[in-house]
Length: 233
Ligand SMILES: NC(=O)c1ccc[n+]([C@@H]2O[C@H](COP(=O)([O-])OP(=O)(O)OC[C@H]3O[C@@H](n4cnc5c(N)ncnc54)[C@H](OP(=O)(O)O)[C@@H]3O)[C@@H](O)[C@H]2O)c1
Image 1 (tube, rainbow, N blue to C red):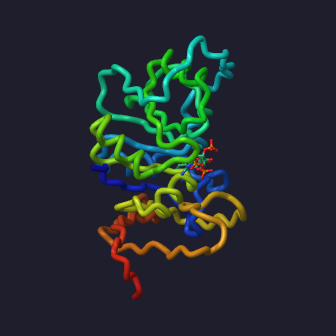
Image 2 (image 1 turned 180 degrees about the vertical axis):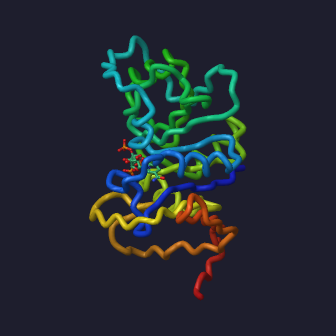
């Protein structure tokens, strides 16, 4: 069993997601107020995005005092809402096991050093292994369901994490807050960064679930992912 997956993003009309030159005063609210209206047990982000929330301190990892088995760790903690980070090499450090009101879950590969696991345990941060060298995102979702009881997860970016779930066919809904701006920055991450070149992939198709005009000239478009093989129109 796996959670239902809703990807939620704020994007410019050209699909860019970094707001550096957009010039909005209340730039956080467009994303956060809409996200808060999506019911979910957890939000999940990529390592780059989570480093905006994790510790700004430099922790140096001492060699581990003992070998720590590469087994999932569910910390004893009171809350039932979660902040999940896809962090295959263990690059996020933590002063606490919470982001706001959510308990942190680190998604790792087995290549992380024992010293990093010691760091997570010292802060009572939960972690799970999604693969030896590379992540199996389907397995990651199954573990979020079975270990933490997560039934709906909201993927909040950035573009690389969205792209890898999209490529694996694991997104059920896409919620886009479309900002009335053209960004035009070549090379800046877009809503979905799946792969360079076309390869053998087919684009993912959507069906509209709802559309709403919000904050004046923004659109909030909610799509269902079309899962059938034959997507020709
Ligand atoms: N507009 C919005 O709604 C919105 C929302 C969220 C974020 N953002 C912005 O987006 C930017 C970051 O986006 P981003 O695309 O550069 O980064 P990201 O998706 O936040 O993080 C990418 C990193 O996550 C890890 N990762 C993701 N998928 C993986 C997979 N399948 N297997 C292994 N590792 C995986 C890798 O970490 P390692 O490099 O450690 O291997 C990868 O480099 C930030 O500027 C942030 O502010 C905007």
